[in-house]
Image (cartoon, rainbow, N blue to C red):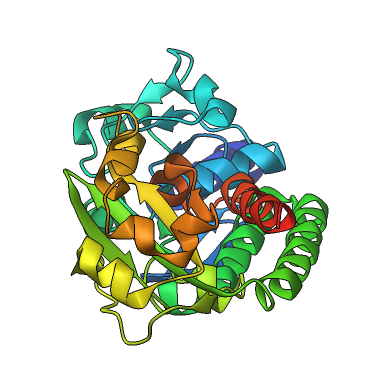
Length: 311
């Protein structure tokens, strides 16, 4: 006769082992997982992930403000407020354009955050770990920045901190728009290697006009990633009241003050912006490398506000 009482513990153990095995096969899906919408679609990510790799510097900036630590970052030119990420304390997992897939695999991340320059590597990285793309939409720059901040806040349970930061950002923007409306027309140019490109509404730097409220000095500029190639003659013909300049060479560490040399000529000197000392050299790291991070965008608002206040 079978002894059921003696078989019960072993039967229960077998069932438990099977359940655990099934859980391992179906992955780490749990009630704590979140479905996150991002630039590449929808991804299920763990709530409050512990091992995070951030290839997107704007997201890294925002996470830093929200008090969220990451484990790995790309090798990059960090501004002073993100300088700690250049230390050996943080694993280096590639560059802004090219992940080191061996290092990423070895890190065994719970979440990978990409955006902008690293966006093209989404498919490859998503095979390693849950990956979200925080690329900002230039046609809805601040709107997408806000959504990205709220997305990261949701993942890491930092909603209160995010709401406070976004409220401050909105107040600063509202104040700047009031000043910009009466400041005159502006033109933004990026210089690199002795050449210039202009950017207008809807471009990667279009928030100057669309969200900050600076009236564009010219309409219809190309909205491609590299802007519209222009010359000193173009700047003179456009004759902006304000000239905003991004020195790409300085942002990438290639040269110091290269933009000033490009603009120091007789044609630009005839513009209203030059004559009235209304040329603003925007922080190139914040504008060109960081972009839509909380610190970077607030600093950009503050810099332009101060420039207008002097007048």
